[in-house]
Length: 194
Image (cartoon, rainbow, N blue to C red):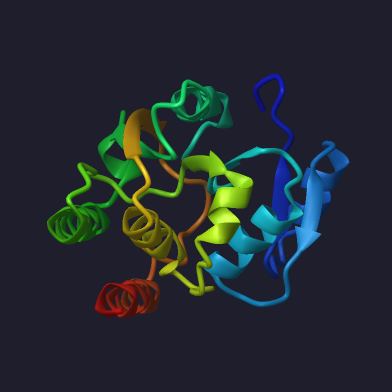
């Protein structure tokens, strides 16, 4: 973690002992029994005590050392929500079906909201209280999309900064399985339909 940042790890029913490892390294670990990406992300948001919060997958694909890239525009008063636009250094970091789905989803968001965003990736930053005020309801894979859609509806300035994207450690529950892709598409389609 960069200086001045405090890690909160949400254990969302993992069976590999990762919560214990994070705890042993000094992270605050929050147990969230309700399964789902949104449930985990929201539990971390509720547990945070700082004004600014950052989100990041804990699979080795994103580097928390890049958090200051996201918080910089917030601190400068240039943005209300900053998304990390993933840049791969290796082709195998981001499978083509997931990349195409993300591109299409970002295109739909641009069309509906007028926001100039090209990636709906998991690395992002905003002010904690403002995020809570967005009343994000989805607790599954639609959470990150609903965050952006609600921010746009609230008139937030949403911007992107480039972040490095590496091959993940372990198998993805989203891009690594047909069921995960289907659940993600279904959850995000429900958010777009609202």
